[in-house]
Amino acid sequence: QLQLVESGGGTVQPGGSLRLSCAASGFNLDYYHITWYRQAPGKERGGVSCISSSDGSTYYADSVKGRFTISKNSAKKMVYLQMNNLKPEDTAVYYCALGGPYSGTCPPPETRDYWGQGAQVTVSS
Image 1: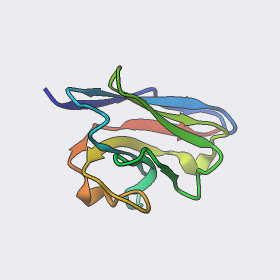
Image 2: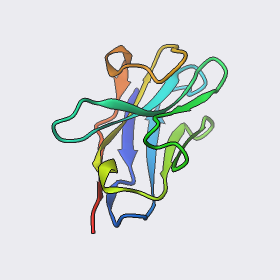
Image 3: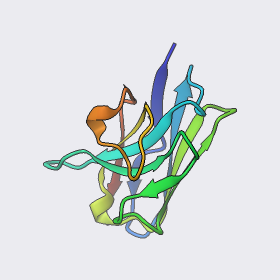
Image 4: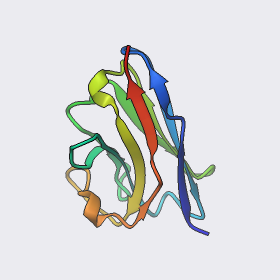
């Protein structure tokens, strides 16, 4: 069956690190555009980072550039988001999502076809 399951969330102090994982059961990750989104209370869901399905190009939101790294292991059907130097404003529920081709930036969430249930990340002292 097709399923996306996030793991690796938790609570960390400012400046700390977490690695989120997304297990993509039933998917060939070379055929799908891959995006990590996040949603904080009272804010719209927005793209954090993504990998193009056409050429493997990666994109990052300005707020996370230099701190977060997206990657995938197609053989293991796993997607990762390494998050370093975490800040309180990174606190949100993080989702992985798969869908059709998109170019230029990370796609709007309404265009994505498959979603995980989300992982809570809390950055606080």
